[in-house]
Amino acid sequence: MLMSDNYRQMADRSAQLAIACSEPSVAKSLLALGLDYMTLATTLDQPAHQRPQTQQHDPLAGFGD
Image (cartoon, rainbow, N blue to C red):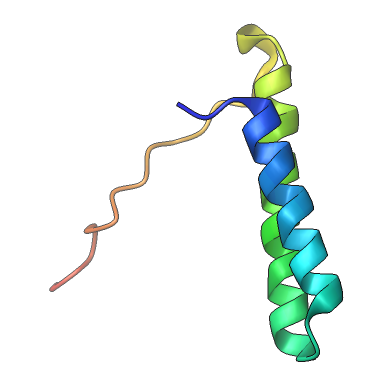
């Protein structure tokens, strides 16, 4: 399982790649990815009883209906 520091490092790498990227749509996607990583890191830093409850999503729900 990844720890909050791992997610922070991935957020930093995403931001660095976004800054170096010349394609605006790719840079925007990399920044969004970095924000997601930073959100995960912040969530992991919270005590378990304070973390938001997430619902399990079935990726196959509705597929083939």
